[in-house]
Length: 272
Ligand code: KIV
Ligand code: NA
Image (cartoon, protein in one colour):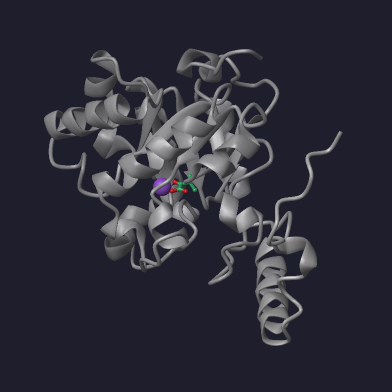
């Protein structure tokens, strides 16, 4: 494709070829996934992955916008989605609109994502009616870690009906897609079959309409912990640690820099 998909293009992929997405926080990483991912999410996971925060609760609008601008510069044919950080949208639909509009204006994102189901439906409806495409995020919603009491599987047993209600509520409110995080596979399949918008799974099911992972998790760069749903497609953290060790050894043994990395006193003759 020559241009980035729009939210309606993502919506139209319901039931089709699975949507491919990853998070990104920097320009070079965004460049690597440009055109491969249908959309790229600047997740508030940036707080934990790149800033060493203990949860996503401390992530600010300023952090999101700075990373959003970096990612935007790396994308030409993937859609950019920005996470709304904790505290930027829950207070009122007006607050949500103000911050979502600022985030889109300052980053050039095509959509925002926010956490919540039934309780956020009114806000989603308000944003969509005013020109802001919204991706919803239900199931495990990490910004609510302090009320959830842990990063547990969501929607087991009697909770299943409530999660289905969340999915239907965000779809009815006008969300163009919904992330399902850490929910039983059978429930993810049921939700996927019963809502008209694409489901994007993370710790959900291969039958979702698409998948997302945190890029540093799937590359093996973030290794502080690994959720069960993370598959490491590479082990770049191991490579980086080995490279740093090798560098230290070569500096100490004076084998780096070698002649090829140094400059002669006189400039070489221009080649003929
Ligand atoms: O912040 C994030 O990275 C996310 C995805 C994992 C869905 O919300
Ligand atoms: Na997030």
